Length: 192
Image 1: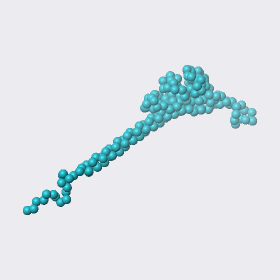
Image 2: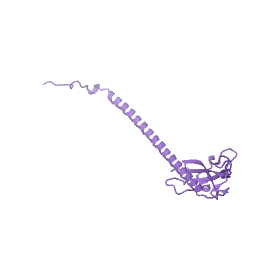
Image 3: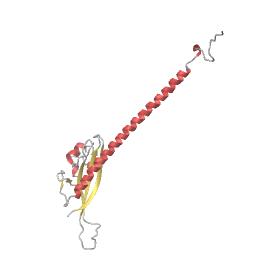
Image 4: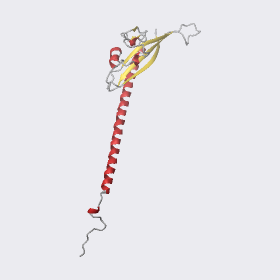
């Protein structure tokens, strides 16, 4: 019987160099780096999505407060009395800037120290808004009274009814107190 020292074409152990092992390790390293990069990208996208949802929640809360202020003004039959401290719900023009540095030319709602605590102390709150860090608030300012200009009564001998302009500023917060949105609207109405 004939003995075979080597099976059909298989290299002997002493002759193997391990090239496939090195190639596989490099290939696995590349795949691992791609996986880690993909996970980091996914994590970043999740954070961006959560921030966008929180910003949208803050905007919706502010819009809810704005609509509540408009509804309050619609229900008023007579011109609301203004105050310098907001005790009558309607502030005089630029009165909410009490205690703020007005020399810098910024509007009161743009100041850094107009925080959630400031809004809580000075603003009015609508009905309860769920899943927000701080309930939204609004301020109404009597902005301007216009008793001239376009009127259906021009030339008809009728008197022009004054129109009162109110500036409504509303602030809302998201799930995090660091996410906020401020919206404004001008509301025009005539009163008896």
